[in-house]
Image (cartoon, rainbow, N blue to C red; front, side, top):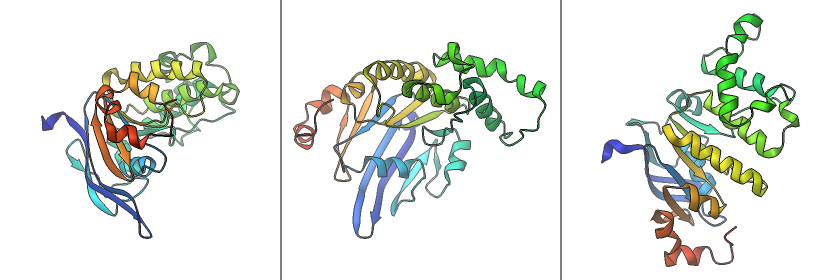
Length: 251
């Protein structure tokens, strides 16, 4: 069973000037699943996510990815291992086209990020793969449109394309549905389901209807601790979870 775990945390804690934001969290993410990290406001989700993606260093505890202890690694180091945080590190250049944005991400994946003086012919050699990624996220008809002109939901789709260009084995999504219309939520949900077919996804998400339809497994946090774990039918009926969400809403 152990070989199925791609990312794990053991006793993960983070203290800020005497306040314990994350308190002894144990987490196991199985390879090939969509795993959601949820909880009411102030539960410690964002802090926990920042610890797992190495944007924060834990006060105590360890993080293991693919059998390697990454507790002391930097975000760039774990990105090279295939653990990629989307939306936070996926830069979208608003004045460049959709295709150009994905092409830059492909350059980055080949350690050519800043070689902008390369010939146009060499850069055009990436167009085939760039178009595949643009098509994969449903933006083929927008490839020549400046990224800044896209709707909010389509910008998120472009950010997923630039993340996919880095060829992640595991994607970490920080509230991918935040601020979206119902139409965009449906589009991005379908996109996440498609791109998860050959990779692992861990996401922090407030939209419980999205969590209920997308997630294979859910970890519920409250006051910095793990409150409940399991699939959606299990955690949604847990009396501790219901109590924690009183007054929070289910939208």
